[in-house]
Image (cartoon, rainbow, N blue to C red; front, side):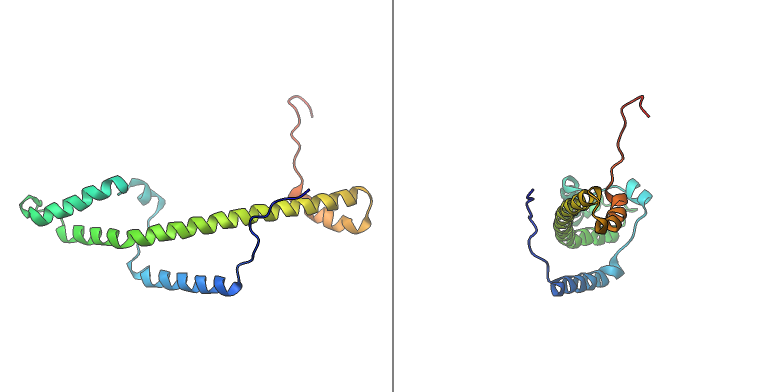
Length: 158
């Protein structure tokens, strides 16, 4: 039985080390400006998405051209800083999402392919064990706990 292998070359360790170093540099550079949120905070916050970006940008423009409508209780400096931060971080966030999705997809595909190959090997070991090949016993016993499936019995049967 042949299986296709879409991942056919290793990533050189120097590349992995270089990427990790650069990502750590990025994280370290941004760290003083980052804020962490709890799950509850993430849940209750107003979220600015693609549809609301233009509202915020238009509001910022209007506060510049028509400042007479700025409420006295509005923190206009804080608002402008927040808008600037969003505009600065959006391209970083989009690039980070692309990298994350590409890494996740590639890792998932490689993992799937590796598991398929491991199942092929386990099948061969199981076959050898069932035929009494003594050298397969230790391998079979080690792998069987990972690969064995629990058989679902039809309703009413024990």
